[in-house]
Image 1 (cartoon, rainbow, N blue to C red):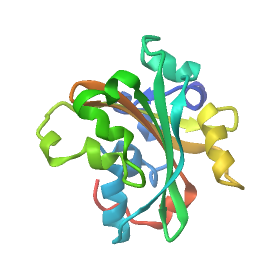
Image 2 (image 1 turned 120 degrees about the horizontal axis):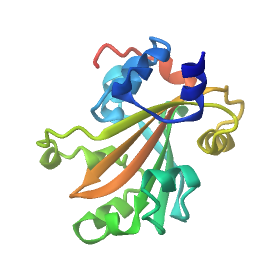
Image 3 (image 1 turned 135 degrees about the horizontal axis):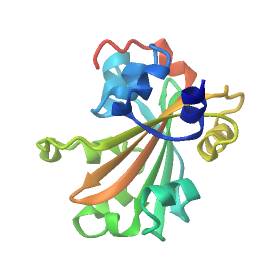
Image 4 (image 1 turned 30 degrees about the horizontal axis):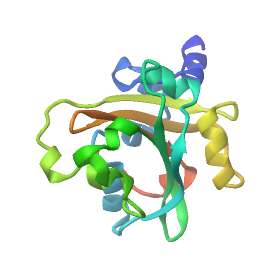
Length: 192
């Protein structure tokens, strides 16, 4: 029981064995190391719609700040819903430090309704053998991310499974949080 409570209150590395605490139906989504957008599009057989909720400068919450070892002060936060037929499947909350979006990475600030994965998983970057660090969490109503998600998704159930990945775009960190909404389970996860 202690492990279950720890999982609810903290992010845990996928490789720590904690993923087995998640219901089997969520495990392929939480474990996958590829583009979530591509995985969903393969499962549904069509392109996702990206609904931008927010894309603006913001200060980090304490949990995100700890993840960056308190070294980042300025960042851009991009929140989107990944939808099929206007039904939200995933809410993505991405933290883009100011220095990560400079120089040749500046395109990450002009995504519009294009998914962030289109930049992070571009063919030119797929050659890296290093897998990014990925954590999972069970978010309940006390979680800052759950609260953000519930503002855009009325009637949201609690708790929700989420994964967090620290990607590198030309060496610069971008933190992507993906909160899985119940409607996602309507689609097969045969590819993992």
